[in-house]
Length: 318
Image (cartoon, rainbow, N blue to C red; front, top):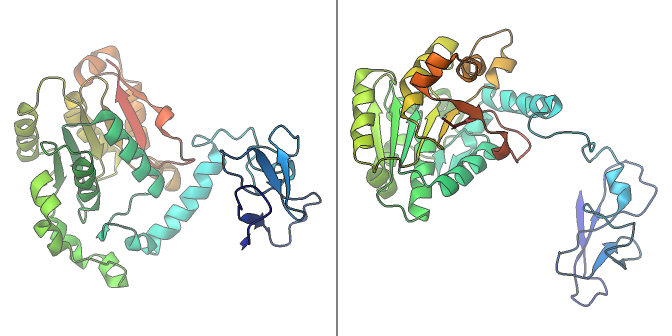
């Protein structure tokens, strides 16, 4: 619980935030948040303002906080740590099987992406500035709409999104999400939105079909050679199908761009089960003849800065 109390006696009249952790026993005073531009570190109860170099001050406030169970141990590595994965995986499975994630939206459109991964995508889109985003697995169109809105915000009017699914997005109007009453926006309205009409090209076909590939290659021919392209695979998650998609789409990823294989975490959730994670491992460990045909990719862990991801972000390096 966070309590906000009136301003303390400091030059800037700051608010004092006192962290109260239920019945947790913390012998020493707890530190409160202090903006970076201030000269001191504030400590609760007496509201004492201390110099930043004081040993009682630290990155998380008072040193006592750092020794409690409420902070992660210093040897925890982040996204790759098993305890991180398991904690978020359990929450994600709960949200999925209860359809609670149906209430997760982007500008009113259902988007069931983990919020951490949406942030990673946002950063990739900004840093890469791809001229084309290729998505397999449209579902209700939330991810394609997210990317379209990012292109708009980045002032990239010539960028495009290709989203591919065996069924039109309107099909999912009758999905379990709608049955829960949590879906906030009829899918039929999405096609009339200005951003969707301008940026998104929806293809109703199998993602590895000649029809889908013809549309993708048509859009690729419009791009200057070497233009950044991001491919996101999020349709059928069975190993055999994901590998088919990798065979089709990996060669289309330019050097330095990304192939994102979504939901690799499912291979752990459904264990023993072969799925996206095994397909990624097959790509990363492919022999030289296969790499010459598909490209050489590395799992770029540097983008996993939000503690957890359900996906594999593969950067093409050769």
